[in-house]
Length: 145
Length: 261
Image 1 (cartoon, one colour):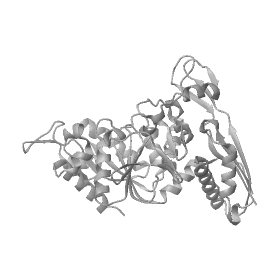
Image 2 (cartoon, chains in turn yellow, brown):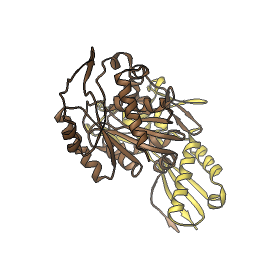
Image 3 (cartoon, each protein chain N blue to C red):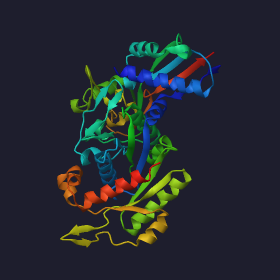
Image 4 (cartoon, rainbow over the protein chains, first blue to last red):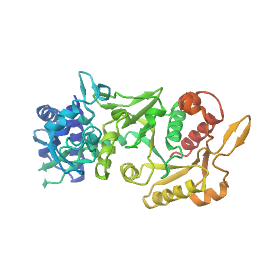
């Protein structure tokens, strides 16, 4: 269900850009979402099409791209991907999972930048890590006529 | 017309939420240990009890303590309009501590602004008269992020103890607020005294009100006593009674609402 509220946020961002750039009709939008958010790409695209109504947004093409997550340790310089991170995320206590009406989701589903609280270096155990990509929630491109 | 820039989705969401909030009051000090979270929690409770639609946002990423003060904890719920704040009676509360519990949150600068914007923008605050924001110590990413996120909308309440060392650090935040264009509402002197058997004692020393106001170039709008019962009963319970502590917070809440635009 979070896909719907994310889609609403994206639509608000599109409308905000349209306002900044003067009048026009949007013909295409491209969205980047990080793998850390674990969003359903098809559900997000569907929700966007559902919400993009009215003369400015109706009929615009929607592209959703999922950016793969990758992490690096500042201490031992190991690099790893989402598969390894998933093993650690599986251990997140149930009480910390956000309650949706029909599911329990990781906090990262909503707050991807919070990943250092839940993921650490699988080799040295350090929490001083960073993600090269995978925490994005960006409107990459808006095309207007 | 084509555009290839990246647009921050969370920022657009935050602006949308901010449009439904009449007043944003930042509670800051620059210094740790002066009781910012106590003042923020007490003010938010007093304002909501006075009938103002009030929410409390804790933007301390590394040391979120508001959930502890208000006896709130995970899990958070999510609804059609976003993340649901936790309720303490009629007060809405949101904090990163509600997502991380006792886990440490080690994080360097670059992600903090995004995280604070995400937390504020994804929370379903509804329409509010007041959003009280509990700032962390220091003048780093979290404080600058809050200044930037609420630019042009927020006013700042400075919290200090009577100690000269505290006042000195707070005066730096006073200067920073000036350069960043954040209006200062006034100064709260926290832990100003302890009342016992109708006698006041001053664990952090006494202060000259005029000198302090001159140094911080702001009026003292409240003197809050140190109340040991807060640590055993919790701040909400102590504020339930009529006592020196609760009257001080009621006066602070009145001062904030009286001076709001």
